[in-house]
Image (tube, rainbow, N blue to C red):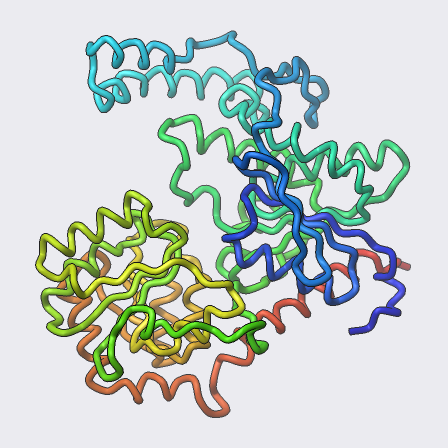
Length: 464
């Protein structure tokens, strides 16, 4: 650490994220490593919590602000690149959410049918507001984005940062407007946008057709404010250059794990599952949703006698987790499925290491094709052979390194085939992590943190 570097002392960094921080390892690692490098870091999360939460990650301060603090009514006027733009309201094509609720309440239409009824109106809303406001149409189509502004904006202003690091897409606009306010007051503030995913290929987080076009416009409106862009893979960096005509290629900061010794003794996955040494144990670690394909693993277990599965998830009681467990029970393999909660990210690699195989059973989805996801690197540092579906980037990497096997997405029989191949000769796959050709030295957060620190310093280096 070089705390005497003239680009760093006294420089305050505010990081912004649209979640409660505690389950977002990338954000935690970025905040802590930047603070360790000498930056004065405050990480602000926005989430549905009852009251503000505060704690520290090493030298970084964390504040999670309650979204419930946002006012129920939006501002009348918002300012975009074309000047004053009307804020969200009731003009234009009618919002059918109230109509749908009344129909369902009266038994007139089941929920699924009501969703079909509203689709044409939602498409009309998108066409109408995009024609009137172009990228600014998000103000009418997704007015909930203002909640992040109302909650986080005043806090950012109070902190008077020198650099704002906006994680993911929702906080980009919050950061851009904070930069505008600071510069209007005579302060020069830098903005880094950290693009965690390719938004055009994302699965909408709300069940309506307005969500994606609204957020795409929101990003397009604000991306020009960024002094630098960071992202998670080379493929995504190329897509961002193409989509936004960026003046320079984003800095790639991989979602790699911290490889320093854990802060406390890590628990043992096999022991937590009650699975004896020598019994084959597969592990899936991370968020669970239909498109992540864990149901395919449940379907494969009857084809893998004696093989156990550990699911390490944020919420063991979540509906989809219960659904997968129930499916396994119906298939007669419920006693071989073990559901466990997350452990701190600095303990995760050691926690996973007693498994035999790490699973990545993703369905084909645009963002799945271009990513090297966090669990990929975590499994690798745990020296686990990886069985991954044939999503492009990870499948190509596994084939190139020899660290695992690839199966056809959603094909339980082919997944079982891949698992049997690895279990027949695990040493062959683990050998990919050893020797001079090992990819592991470059797949560490420590290496990624150096890239991020170098970017921050470059933004404060005077140009001649």
